Amino acid sequence: MILHTISAVPGDSCIQQCLQVLAQGDALLLLGDGVYAGMQGTLTDVPCPIYALAEDLSLTGIKARLDNSIQTISMGEFVALTVKAQSQVAWY
Image (cartoon, rainbow, N blue to C red; front, side, top):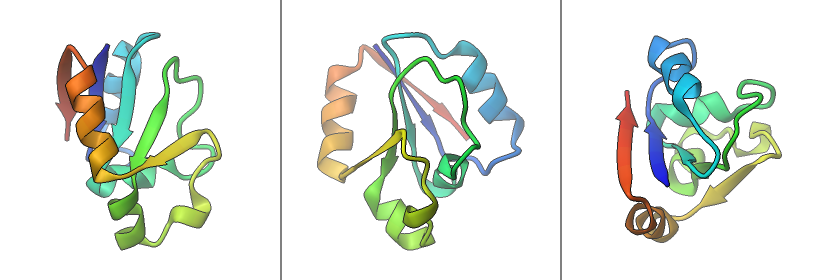
């Protein structure tokens, strides 16, 4: 599994580049400004689980607008994902 982390705002070209390389078995984590990409209807046809960091959702105030398919995780769960992943790619 590759853990992809997005910290770029929606509309940034790196988000589209990331979506093109995601594969089944990977994981996508939205953090920092990247949580805005998790708003309803923004990410579609993603072949892997999508997570958003709870702390960043709290800071932005958009948790109520988060797409239902995205799982909110804590910093500890982020660390667990990192340990589980064979590698990590940061998109920002």
